[in-house]
Image (cartoon, rainbow, N blue to C red; front, side, top):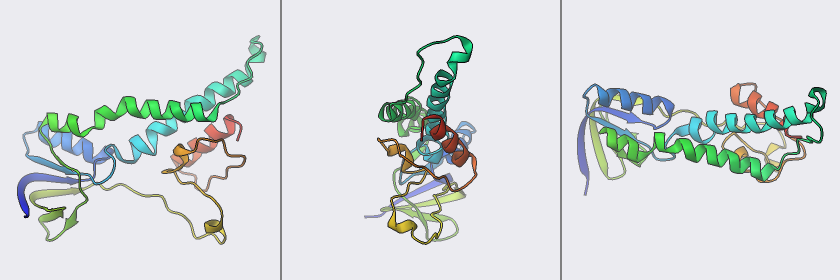
Length: 195
């Protein structure tokens, strides 16, 4: 059976952009529906800004300890327990996740549907067994990592920003391809942690 919903604003994607639009629109009195088929909070919470900053803090702390002798601090080796650093990242994400949660947005009055959507007309989106008709539709689906077509890359283990934070063992070597914010932050954090 197909459910039908009419809404003022339909937002596809519950990352930083989609959540901001949803919160703002519902506060202005709009009937808001939010679709998210993956993780609430999107890249920023799960694979970008938040975990990156948490890992930068670990790297910065290790670097400060490794260079503390110049300030008269002795026996500060700054050795990083990589698995513990990743636990720190997970803890930081879990502390911030409630701000981006289904429960919070439903509490604000946003209808949250945990499905992917596909357009079936210029004003209609199908999400699972629900058809949503909206006056306005915001597509805030974010991005996904691009794995460049480098010969031999598929023959070796590689990570993306979506998998790097799941590693539990410190890599012996790490090459970052890409000079965007997350790439630069991950390069700096990992070199400071001894990679």
